Amino acid sequence: MRGSRLWQNADTLAAVVTAIAALVALLYAHLQITEARRAERKANANELWRETLRLGFENPKLSDPSLKLAEFDYDKLTIDGSRELFQKYEIYVDTVLNASDEILEISPTEPWRTSLRIQLLHPSRLFAFASLQAVGLP
Image (cartoon, rainbow, N blue to C red):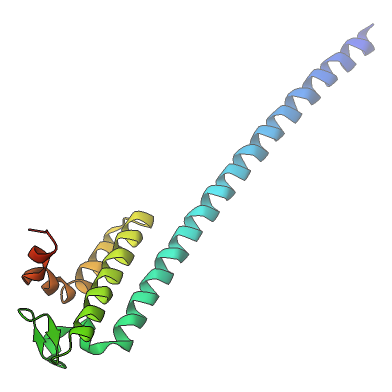
């Protein structure tokens, strides 16, 4: 009788240990998935940042008007007399703003906020000209 009682306790103990092991495995899997998602978000933010920088290097005239690499006329909406180049500037700024928004949505950390603030210093001049009123923005 004593031997059968010992086996009953062993069965119960084995079931408890198995349940605990399953819970630990579930917790570990959850932590792994969470970390993988965090790493993916960080990689996505870095990729968007690299793309924004690449765009700036490929378009130095558009990326920093204060360098005076081109003549910006915000009244006539031209760059070096070209309306087409000004439209490219608008698209450039829109792309930078969208990428910045996505980066902050993915990873709203202070280092990213600082980097984006610096990046947006120059294109933000776009908001100073009157064409925004032409499209119905204040």
